[in-house]
Amino acid sequence: MTAAPRTPEPGTKLPAVGTTIFTVMSALATEHGAVNLGQGFPDFGCDPKLLDAVTAAMAAGHNQYPPMTGVPLLRERIAAKIEALYGRRYDAGTEITVTAGATQAIITAILALVRPGDEVIVLEPCYDSYVPNIELAGGVVVRVPLVPGSFRPDFGRIAAALTPRTRAILINTPHNPSGTVWTAEEMRQLEDLLAPTDVFVISDEVYEHMVYDGALHQSVARFPGLAARSLIVSSFGKTYHVTGWKVGYVAAPAVLTAEFRKVHQFNVFTVNTPMQHALAHYMADAAPYLDLPAFYQRKRDLFAEGLARTRLRLLPSEGSYFQCVDISSVSDLSEADFCQWLTREIGVAAIPLSAFYGDGFDQRVVRFCYAKRDETLRDALTRLAKL
Ligand SMILES: Cc1ncc(COP(=O)(O)O)c(C=O)c1O
Image (cartoon, rainbow, N blue to C red; front, side, top):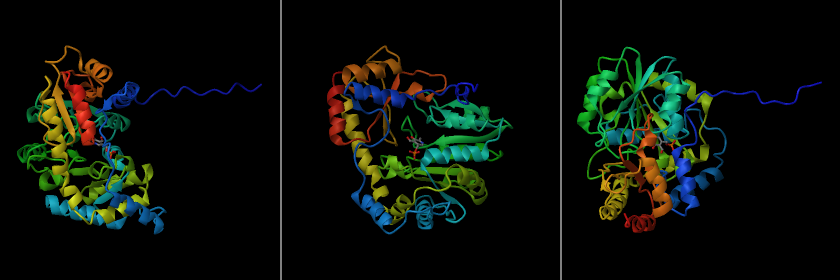
């Protein structure tokens, strides 16, 4: 007699991973008809010219596998943009790779570099994929907090975390969730700190075009000592309001790109062809990304002016599309309970910062996303006015 069909117990490679806070808060927002300022994506469309370019690319027959490293014209345009903005020339053939968004770029970079037992420094609070990615590579996660309250890098603590086993550090500016933007001086401090080491930098720059008040994005590409040891990750999803397209890229010196591509070709191989052609076409005009700071700074200001009339205390949003607020003068609840309460009772969803820390550190700060239509932001502000 054959045994009854049975699914073997898989165990888990990621015991700490469950349903993310973003999924939980979005579901709660839908259930309660709340304005969803939780998850970070625009509720408005992209430039119709970009959509036309996709249709044109499909009609022109760009529907089969592109080159593994990305459509050549797109790689050229990416290299030209980086050179124009940050002054470093990456070779489109050997130093730029098109990826399925930043998320795939980051895990691919980690799998390419991190060997079992290698230590990787993350600066908390951090984007939620970094830690599981390091764990999947068999690496050891070394968590270093950004300074609570200001979210600036603490170079004393980063220096103390460096050991002979440190393989890489992940940095993210403009920063999700805090909205801080690293200064040139901070980048130079990192450059000096790493100079005597063999530590690699994975630099998550997906919000590179969202920096406000006349400040400049300090890409690692601007700092030769950092650029030589860095993989830069960016994403068209953020820049062109198409987060669902999942197209991004990695720029890195040729030896690092060669290792990156070895993994890339076997975990994604290629990225969808018509979108790449459309993005290459659209990138010929720099205006859409050069105009982005003004576009989002206006939304930031609209939202911040309304919030300033509540008892929430605003933290600076220097870049990204996130606004953090201190809730302590409004409520005694924990961040997570406050977000649930806010969604249910006030009708606005936010994300607790504790979700971005491994130990759930609670500093009474929550994050709103202002990448929303003005009427969405006004609706949220009308509701938040009760606070
Ligand atoms: C800091 C950071 N890195 C990476 C990503 C992922 O980007 P993509 O959608 O291109 O995978 C996000 C998206 O929210 C992010 O905030």
